[in-house]
Length: 74
Image (cartoon, rainbow, N blue to C red; front, side, top):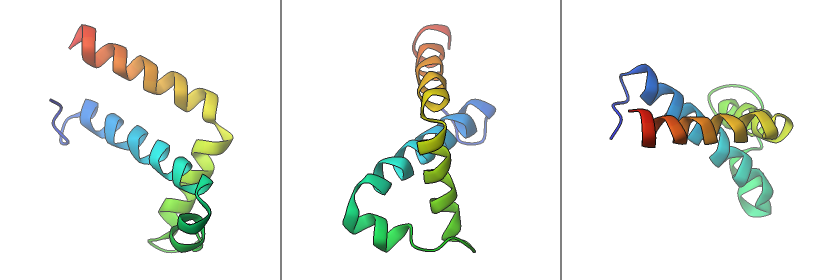
């Protein structure tokens, strides 16, 4: 169990947020509803989706390394 207030928790939350937004970008109905705004508070979802789709290899490697760290080293 990770605490959100620790550095590990912030990294896990950020990675899960980026992966979720990138996945939601692939769903057409949710893409038009959630990711239509590019500015403001709702723009964070769009920007996370763009990061997840453009840097998908780096995000995947980060998720795997964080999973390895959480399971075996922590």
